[in-house]
Image (cartoon, rainbow, N blue to C red; front, side, top):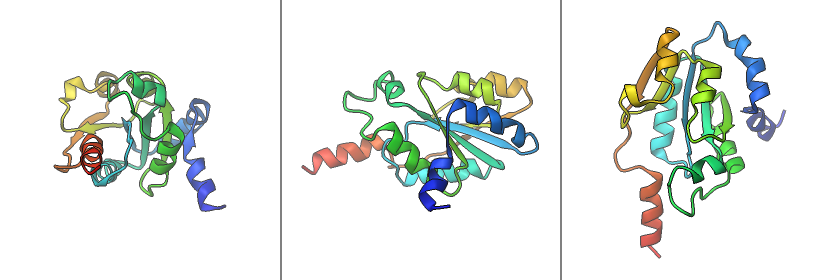
Length: 163
């Protein structure tokens, strides 16, 4: 199997996800989500640490339409959802990527009911979408510290300022 096929096989639709959930019953499933518009060192650190919390890392990726609802800016996303999904899926520590169209991944979290739900430490656990369903089912909700100075917004601003 080619490397590109391996990457594309990691990008799931909801039906493919449903088929895999049963096969992960004896594994510790970790879920996180984001836009990941411009992949940077902070994202790599965050996703690698999230992966270390279990056996299977699923990344919920905001679709292009979803990002438009988040007030990230009129020109966002900079990369389309297919490109962003391929980049995230190419990371060795990401097991699966699934796009979602809603403004939050709540329905996806309710479907997966991960063992560990992860967000950045800029969130309080009680403000993390899906925390209740995960905790009610015996799972954990964790936050991961960001590396200072790395954000998509700051990279975009630096690029604009250099023109």
